[in-house]
Length: 461
Image 1 (cartoon, helix red, strand yellow):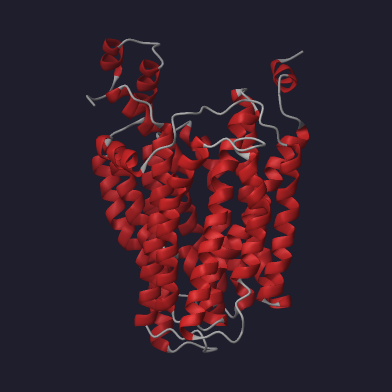
Image 2 (tube, helix red, strand yellow):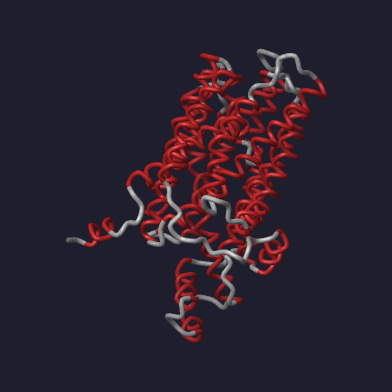
């Protein structure tokens, strides 16, 4: 019997459990894609809310989202409900999240002004809080389904792959469904599909091992204290934040397809050229990392994104095939940033452990989530304000020339601002390299002494 067969036989989870874990991510992504990629377009172009009002709503809701993730993590860590530590929350989310998107996209036709804004605020916050309830426990669930590390990695890999391919499929499916049956009916259909796909996990998943308890999660104070004491983590997240603040791709895709490429039917093509490169990156980067340090892979990706974003601006959108090619190339570069963020965070964990003797994976990845959501909030606010400044009118079938020019600049040139800051920040200040991190990891695992580690490192850290 070979080693692989022995490993399969030692799995503690069933095929149904692992399969239902992947299905859950597909169902969760149905909800996420509908909101993340289409909600702003729904508000401005189909409910005719002003971009500034939408920007403020998304800003406030996403700031709260950034704060409530670590807070909810603390709650989950401290509570053990009847039926398990994580599954009770997943049961709530399985029902609550699909219902929340029906309510969010079910804004009554007669609402206007302040009542419309209030409805959008309340329903988006409801969705956001329920999505937090699904997002935090689902990742933690894999750690209590099995104590076999390889099996745990497999389960999490199933979730990641399910997410990636479902996002690609949904990028092609959402807008045609909306055009065929309307926003509200499409939301109902996607909600039902989400529920059906999320539900099996509630039946098949088992919490076999007690999650480490009693210590609680990372507080906001813990997060900022650790961030200030780990300089390379701080440098990396400064770069991530400035890139994300000016990255308009996800928010602007719908507007570019609708107004510049021929109509709403072109939105799926734009969405695919965003999601497909990120899937390619997830396969390509581990292969490249065997040949090159990921520091250089990241700088290459960010530089590609800057160059092709600038080139896309000058090429314009007169040729749809040419636009799609350049959009793939620029997103292939920026996709490296998202695909590698967890890898760099893990390196910073080793560095922090090496320097201080304290290992803080939980705090590190809380910072990753917190930073991503906080910058998403401010990015949405900035986009809403800029769309107001350029004179965007969601009720118009065609935008005026100044608005069209403004949308195109926001889509192509605005990301360059963050990239122009992030590339020097990482290139000059970030000194961790793969071989040094491996040496630090050996010391952290007590496989080599401090003196042996210091002698092998390429520089003094």
